[in-house]
Image 1 (cartoon, rainbow, N blue to C red):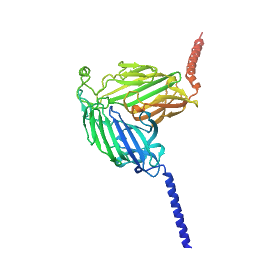
Image 2 (image 1 turned 45 degrees about the vertical axis):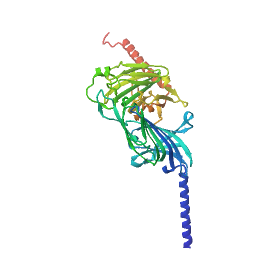
Image 3 (image 1 turned 135 degrees about the horizontal axis):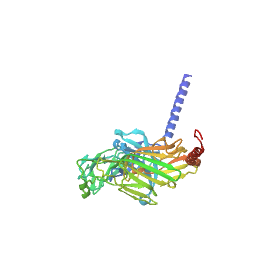
Length: 473
């Protein structure tokens, strides 16, 4: 009897073990460990033309595992992950001129870190990659604050030299069969660079590779020391207030705190030398900025704490509007300027009605100044009084909160949708939408209030005229 009981228990244990193994296999049938994937070819192109670094990474990934793979991992060193502003990925179909890109979702990987603190990101494939299959991917990402001025301080007559630190080998959680890295500098003046054979330097391009059969998480540090006199324009804070009026106008007010984030200026400043020798004196400074505004802007103004600044040029049109602004003084390394830009827009250009009857604002999120990094941007959308149920659609993650503001003749206040984001680059300059409900009867509130006030004043004046308040007749 005891023999049969023990046998039945053993059979039950094996059955449970077999059932759990099947469940585990089914749940992991669309996943693959990093060792199952292999990168056949990898090409990385790094553009150092400005202080905002743009990288394009082209990969051909092959699945050598026994099960399909649903995602591909990317790895970034801790220093780059800290300054990673934006990352996009797409699946490449076709070749050269006939190639098409299919966007893919990119998110932080569930694996928190790789070796030496490497940050991992996961690319979700459109279709699971079958065993023995391959897929071509194109990854583009933007790095900020990754150029170090060296020397840290320069005089008015010196050019600006910077350092860029990276790896000659592409950091990846997979083995890479063949890889190449190309670094493009803004000029041919390269002071020095780390040589990792094979490596070549031709005019504005540094080429590292090709390197063969590199294991996962290979890393070979390099430093490039080169001249970069392009403006290091950084907006420390941008506060934009967008006020909607259903009477036909949209008013935009933008408050800027701008700084030159390059090598700090040392010594005195000579304006005579700056103006007489523009090609040699203050070559790393900037005295004008290009602001790209929406088409059909009107009532444009540009002022600082002192008052209106007249050194600006505005070109408007039905397709685009551009304004070239000049601060009161040229900005050298470490110098700051604060100013305000304001303008109006026809409401029909930015406010629309959705199919479900909601009104929605369609406006640009990022900074309109060309090739500028924004440390922190705050968009405040002031809705008309009486608006309800506001909701937001933004193509990237932002911090959101609600406020209430009061203006002339307001009773309950106007709802304000506040959107904040840090580390904003020109690629964030895409459209966002703010949806809300609004009944047209609320448009009559302020006119009726004014009519009522004037009516009561008229009645009071009429009563005062016909009233006899004398003691005796």
